[in-house]
Amino acid sequence: MIKDQFFVRWNYHLLTSPGYVLLMPNYTGSTGYGEEFASAIEKDILRGPASEIEEAADEAIRRFPFIDGTRQAGVGASYGGYLMDWFEGNTKRFKCLVSHAGPLQNSSFWGITDSAYDWERFMGGPVWEQKGAWIDQSPATYAANFSTPMLVTQGERDFRVPYDQSLQMYKLLQRRGVPSRLVVFPDQNHWILKGEDAREHMREVLAWLAKYL
Image 1 (cartoon, helix red, strand yellow):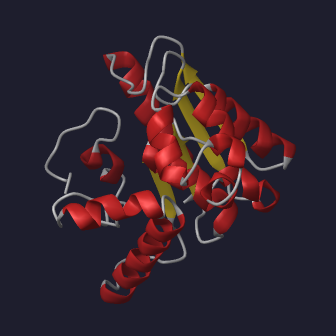
Image 2: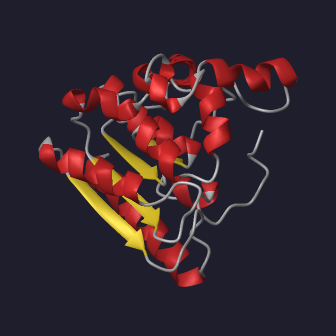
């Protein structure tokens, strides 16, 4: 649904410029399929959408013989970064991952984000209950499984997903001995908008993909 929009943070043409095939599935929560489909993600914030992305990748590989299924990567920002953090602990299919401004630990994220009320709605109850999605669908819960090389990028002035989440992710990756790199842009917020910063961010992303794909 967003393929015709132009983004600085994720420019689809630049991402595919080395010859990569780019897949952007409309998983549960996407707009354009009615309110029920869009809001269903609130009941299953990570597990279902992540499995749908993997199903879409499997189907694309089945349909198109020019896709090399042995060389897959995942990239995402904001909620997409949340998905990448989830993939880090819940699948081994990717050669590498790129997570920009992705929430990692549901409880600590609730305490620092500017959307705390929404988070309680997504998790199914207040943070002090610490049950259901607070634990089950928190990427940090699966840190023992971390093994996929990951590039973590973040704007230091981000108030939607404050950069402590990326620092925690990087620290866990380092603690687990996973090849990882942290890139922080001090003057940027939830988006990497300044021209030279955006250029450098894309350089970092493409260099990471080239290294592992």
